[in-house]
Structure formats: C-alpha cells, structure tokens
Figure 1 (cartoon, rainbow, N blue to C red):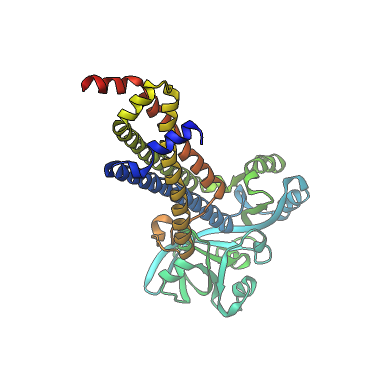
Figure 2: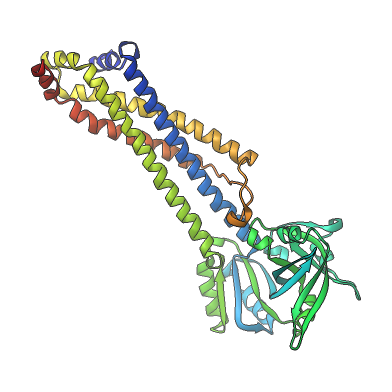
Length: 405
C-alpha cells in the first residue's frame, strides 16, 4: 500500500473518528443523495411533460396546416401541387373545415369548435385514440342516414361534460335567427390535451358543408403530416413559395407556442432549483472536512514536521470529500430512478386536467441524462473538496493551533 493510501485510510477511517463527524458524514451523504434524486426526478418530469404534450399535440394536430385568407374553393389544385413534390417529404394530407357553435346536452351548454374531417384521409395525419359506439370505424360512425340526426364524435371531456348524453343540440347562428340542430354522439376521441378533448367535435365534410350552407368542395385548409415533424418550419417556407402569397402555413410549434414555451420554462426552472440544491448539499462536505481537520490537527502537524508535503495532505482531504460525493450520488441516482419509475408506471400522482392539460404526472427517464447528472454531481463534490482542501491543508492551521497551546 502506498503512503498516501495508508494515510488516507487512517485519516478517514470511521472507527477512529468521533460520533459527531460520523453523523456529519451521514448527513452529507443523505443531503447529496436527496439532491441528486430530486434532480433526476425533476428532469424526468420535465421530459415527461414535453414528451406527452408533443405526442398529444401531434396526434390531434398535424405537423403543418395550410390555409388561405378565405375558404379554399379548389382544394384539388392544392393537393395536386403538393403531392407531386417528393422533396417536401409529405406522408399524409387531409382537408378540414373549422366552425364554431354552441352545444346543449344533459342540461348543460358550452361553446364548441366543430371540425369537419375527411373520413377517407384523416387517418393519414391523425392518430388519436377513439372509442366509437358498436366498435365502428370513423367513416361508419360519422355516416348519417336521411332524416336522422347528424352523427358526430365528441372529445372525451366534452362527452363527460354533457353526462355522456348521446343526444345533443347545436345552436347554429343564421342570418335572422338561431337554428337548433339535433346531433347524435356516435363516440368519443381522446387526444391527451384537455383543451381539445373539452371543446372539439368531429363531423364529416359533407355534413358540415350542408349545416353551414357551404359550397360543395370548399374547405378551410389542409393538414399535412411530414416524415420529420421537426422539419416543419423549413417545409412550411417551401410550401408558401410553391403555392403563392395567398396561402399561409402554420407549423405545430407555432400553433402550440404557449404550451411549448411553458414546458421549456418549467424544465429550466426545475433544473436551476435542483442544481442549487446539489451545490448546497455539496457544501456539507466542507463542514465534514473542517471537522476532520480539527480532529486530526495533531497528526497533520506530525506529518508536516517529518517532511510530508502539503500536496499529500491536500489529496487526503480531496479523497475524503470525493468519497462522500460519490457514495451520495450513487445512492441518489438509484433512489431517483426507482421513484421516477414507480411514479410513472403506476401513475401515482393525478393532475387536474383543466390546469395541466393531462391527467397524471408524466415521467420520461433518460439514462444518458441520468449519467450526465451523476458525473456533474460527483464533479461538484470533487471541486468543493479541492477548494476546501487547499485551505485546510495549509501548514499555518497546524502551526496556529500549536501557538495557541
């Protein structure tokens, strides 16, 4: 065994230290562990919110929306001009119509958005979970028989709001009066975002055109699905060049800018707060090193007197501090991973969907990020130990102690 290893094992041996220092060591390890675990959980929650929001947004909304300043009366021309461009990497396209109305059902009334969809092509861009009556597909569910109420599919929260009442009336504004139109709720969809699930109903394009007295073939715009949703901004600019100035494009990031900004802010704030906790916990290591130094002043004085350099004394304290940081970090990583997994897998923490837009606390664990956190926290402990040991290993501490005697 080398000299430095022998001295380090002797100085930091728990059996030769008083109870006060042992307790401080345990407190320091616990502090580092809790801070590391909290940082891993906070990071996993932030990633979980981001993942769930993006997943839900891309399931209900397309990657890209193409609209004009007015209703598009010749949609086939737009479809032909875009589908022939393989460089745009469009994997799906469907027309839609947006209209607003009031809905009355189950003794309640609520403002809603009616989305007219093409039952043939909507599956190309939309992956929402749907619960349709009698297990029908969307085309069959939205099919309306003559002299029967219009069939619609409602957002799950809106369906619950009306007490799961299948008979609902829509209030459609007309030129001189309000028109009450009965509709039949043929099922529900769940996007994962409360705002969509509580405000939207789906209706077939022919029925919404008939309801709002629109010309045959007229649409509000097109929803596009891309091979890579994160290239939406670049593709949007190219589509505007192809179609001309009368058309505007909106990416899914622009459409949900507020939600994305809120998630990014939450992730940043959580990382900063939990990072400060790690630094504060690392400062406990300084207290342990100070107490150890005071207790070992006699040994330090003897070692310095026989010629041991200050560098070796400093390394002894660095090893002690780094060991505390390493143990605490490893325990914290294990705690953080276990707690995060349990919370996410069993959905232990419910959320108010009206506020957070989702029903339970989401978790997305990233092993590479957890590894980076572990390295960072060990590095903080090591740096703290180095800075503290430079002062504690100064020979004037021991000399001052001897003069005081």
